[in-house]
Image 1 (cartoon, rainbow, N blue to C red):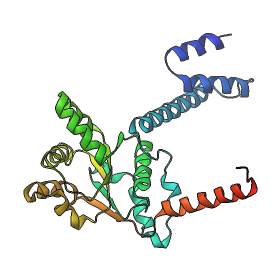
Image 2: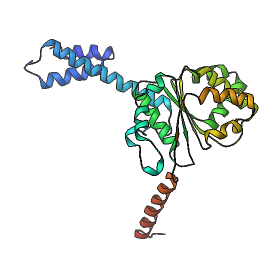
Image 3: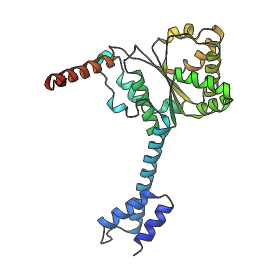
Image 4: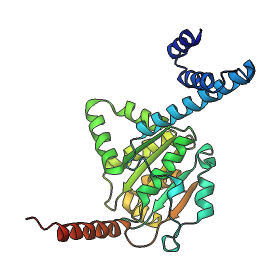
Length: 260
């Protein structure tokens, strides 16, 4: 008799998990074999799980990752990639984020740096941390525009608050004077407060020269290297292999259906 009003009240309070559990229990347990405490416990468990799922979905959406479906479980530990499985699985526990440490992913183009960074990002969102992904070229563009229209302090504040910031695709060209200063300000705001993942083609040993001005380079690298977990990906480009497979499929299709 109270089923519908109760469901309406749960929906009004945003307790969709409890409402779903109520309906399921009402259908599965018509004889009321479970006591009230067991019913309440099961409904609360469902509500907690439902809210966790919603938070995870929101964190993934807000992260704006290039590969949102990348996950730790799908990582290939083939010998030629140079990945230490025990190290990756240890990092997946998330203790490095609690300690405000960094991850630096280096390797040639196409070796999977971005995908692996996104896998760590998804895992971090699963652990209930906020995540935001941005490519370094886009970051510098956004910072330059923010300086022009007065949004720079708000942009830096937004980037400083996120618990895991993924800075993807630090390329090989040198930074401008303003880019160096912008990057230094960002890392100073995040230093020993939040965690960052950086992907780059160049090895860390070449970063000082890439940044350019020695004093600023020292300050930037001091904040991101000394407490960073370094992962160097090896092997041939994974993109090249995928492209070849797609070309083969297209060629076969064209051979079967030669309608031109």
